[in-house]
Image (cartoon, rainbow, N blue to C red; front, side):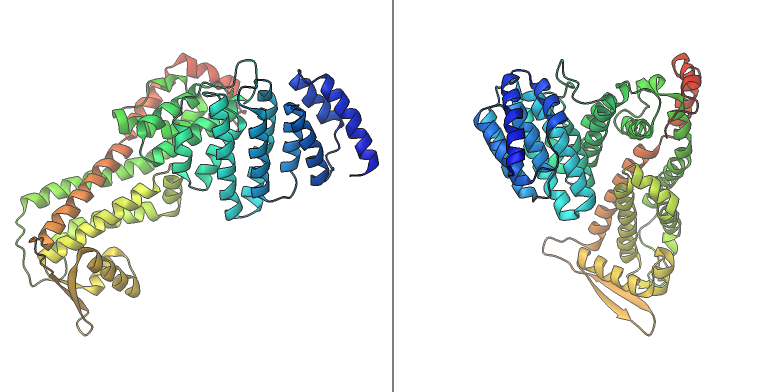
Length: 460
């Protein structure tokens, strides 16, 4: 470290020591006077001295500057651990400083996520997890910027289980007297927490978290509000089969945006209803169909429904909407369950399938059709013989010692398909609920009063 910088730091250190019981004042002094271009070695030298003197607000500031340098994530984590071991959880004066540090660290982690590639991004999740555990122990029930960034990173890196612990803990908001997190950031925290819980099928927790995100006052309607309410509405239908009671508090422009999403859910609802109706019809039919016809005649209505389902979810605009609403995985699950059910039902009925018919009905290429047959044969433990001259594949069930047959496999797949159909129907049966929602919003004075004030300022 140069002599000039040493003298400057020493003078600054004297001032800091005089104000050590006023954390915010210390941070202001540092922010105005410290040269941000100091090297990592120079910053670390001052940081160590401040830790030794137990001037933790100032130490936190220099640690935050250290994290902005181009050093490895592992080294930053070592700095954090050392810092935490020194300050002790009971020192309430460290809270403003640590809040400041957490915000700086969150900025750094976002940088790693966007610039440093997948591996570095995933490391930041565990770095933030360490910080959040420290915050949870010292200040349980309060949100900090590190919490927001951590939960967001868990969603972006798909580390849902890692974030679930914090997503479901009790959170009351910023600590009293400290404007730690602004309302938009708090709303973001509840949104990503709700996404984590919904992804892991904890719909009750997701509902509660998204509700907290909705009632936070953030001013004019924005894109985040729309995302929260869409998810909140769907989860309300899953849990309670009706729209949420808080609909009259939703800004009018959010409702306007919601209208665009009705057709997709209405189409899915009709498809799932058709699947259930066809399944009921099939239950009434005899399972002993002609063995000589390999063209899947009795599967016709089943196939039409599957094709409609596939074309709907795989069209670009619909797929994007499903992905945005975090329903893509469930939609694919429904597709596979229906396809597998059709497969085992066909084996049970005919024993022979025409490969070209498989390609046509499942909309697959020649190689994809063969690969799909191999996958299903392996999955269900049946013998298969392909006749290339005739373009057919014949199946024979492998009877196990327990007496399990392809018939029992078909019944199990049928139950899976119907279960998925039920879930999809519950999830997407909202077109009527949407209309009810719009009707109630339009007569709500609270919603209508916002139209003028939000006109042209929705920020969507």
